[in-house]
Image (tube, rainbow, N blue to C red; front, side, top):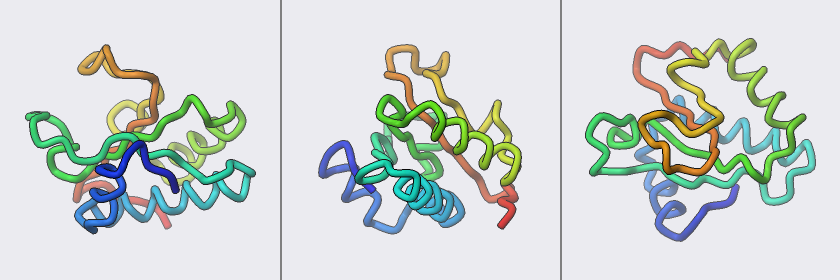
Length: 120
């Protein structure tokens, strides 16, 4: 796993990221490395205290840089999350910038809450 900067690394290491989300990120990072992505996934945003309506404020969202993820690997990650794990693609997994954050670079945004059922 890689981190955009030391602050993102520190946030990840606090253990405050929602446990279900953390497990999914670790699984996806392992998959990325098995598929040959050197260093694994790059986490770019976790905790944003000023983002009033965001899951980032509740430690329930993680952004992953996708510009360095190959198209086949991104398709595989998407397939696993949506078809195998049954994540809701409209609410919990975005690949492009959202209308709420039009200035952000393309990224994968994963969010989860206590009601999310993650299939093992």
